[in-house]
Length: 253
Image (cartoon, rainbow, N blue to C red; front, side):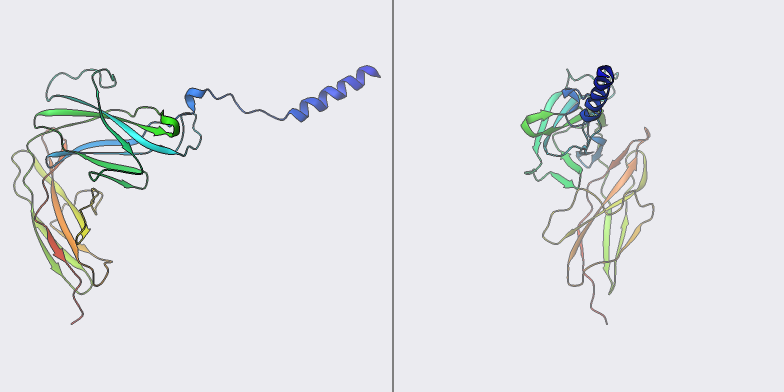
């Protein structure tokens, strides 16, 4: 009888303890690496972008990011590739506070886009980025991405035609010094505001016209276009911005 009572007590005690989750090491409680990292020449700068992580290294949802840190490697173009993942030959480039971003950096949801203007032709720049959480906890480094600077393609020429319900854009690119025209990226801003770093179209337009619809009456829009050139290497680069042109929905006639 005594032995049976002990067994019942042990069963109750085990059940009351509940089920414990898997052990998570402290090293996994930091932000995961930023994703969708890319770098592309845009005129005389490099446009660098990435998506902020929403999980930690253990795969759990993570909030409370306060900033990012970016490192950069600068080397002559055309030399033999080294260890792209090694960090010993990188230098600190930017440390950004997400609540106080500089003018050359924009945030679109979890996407951050910045322009690196401290670059030179015939040099290659490689970037890696990590997220920073509260208490200066640094997350995992992203995969490296690189962009080689070449002489920027010439900007296109833009004309804007205002209509009662839409604005028509017509543009033509000048022949590139090398490579071929792959299309055009269209940028739009409200008059008096700077252009965004993201264009209206996700992929280059292969035609020479764009009809902009869904606009607010009484608002003046400013447009600019960049030619996208595909180099013989297959890399795509953006030209400088075209002439700026204004558009405004016309009153019904």
